[in-house]
Image 1 (cartoon, rainbow, N blue to C red):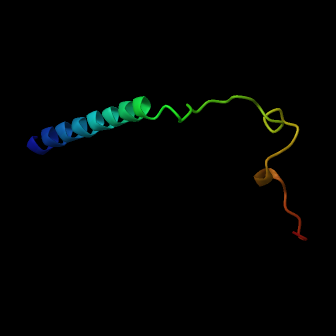
Image 2 (cartoon, rainbow, N blue to C red; image 1 turned 180 degrees about the vertical axis):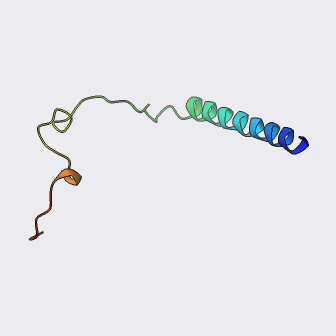
Length: 60
């Protein structure tokens, strides 16, 4: 029981440090853009397939 409580507290400390690090990066690095989809390409509309979906022939 003692080890479980100690590891639970240690995990809480790691989570707290992780949240503080994320806040620090968010506030002190404004040049980095947030990850979001700005526009769709032809691949998203199904007009072309990504290279890893194409079948390889014996000549390739």
